[in-house]
Each structure stands twice: as structure tokens, then as C-alpha cells.
Length: 142
Image (cartoon, rainbow, N blue to C red; front, side, top):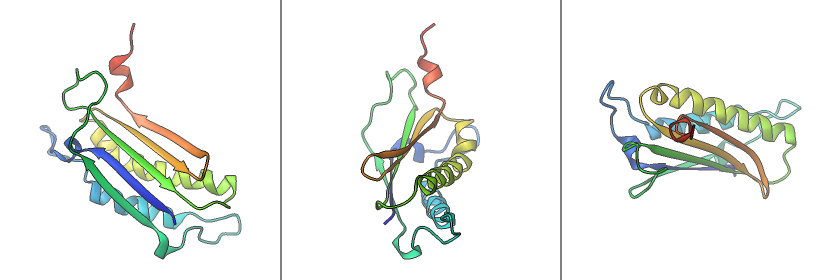
């Protein structure tokens, strides 16, 4: 442990018409794994064993996002499952490290494409829940 699973709409693999950018999920997997390896506990020790870090990604070939009015809307769901016993400070530091890596990775794509993103850490009860995206304002009612 820890294990990260990335579920995402397959349309994010498509190149954007403006710059040809795509989600590059393989690079995201590496970035998330590297972020986990930077997390340290209160004593400065590495929290997650290098050999235990796993990141897997799965595109969803079939999906529906929001009301369908944004044809190329997408979604990414990232969940980390980690073993119990880590302090609240370590849990939050882990979430912050993953959120920073995710925001850095998807920042340029958010400028060109509409999608939502959820990042969640599970250790029994949910311990971190971050959302990043630009879909909700499209559907806000006046």
C-alpha cells in the first residue's frame, strides 16, 4: 500500500483541436507515484514504501457527464487507498501532495477542455476529498 486508481472518461485521451494536448494519463500515473514518494512523516521519514506504491489507470469507454450539453465534457476520479495508522497531518500532507501533482498535470488541459476532477483518499472513512474542475459553472442556474 498505497494504491492509486485513476478512472477517467476515454475522451480525455483525444487531442484538443487547439494545441493537440491530451490528458497524458501515463505521465499522470508517474507524477502521482512520485508525489507519494515525497511524503514524509513528522520525524522526516518516508511514509510510503517505494516498492508498495502502485498507480493504475482505466479509461471508461462508455460514460455520461452532466446533462450532455457539453459534447466533449470529461471526468477524472482519482482514489488513493492507504493502510490505517497514519496521523491526520500525514493524511493531509499526502492529499496536498497529490492535489498539487494533479493540478500541475491538468492545469494546461483545463484551459482547453471541460472536465471535472475528484481526488479522494480512503482509509476506512474518507480522510481527504478535493475537487478541481470547470464544469459546475456551466450548469449553474441563474
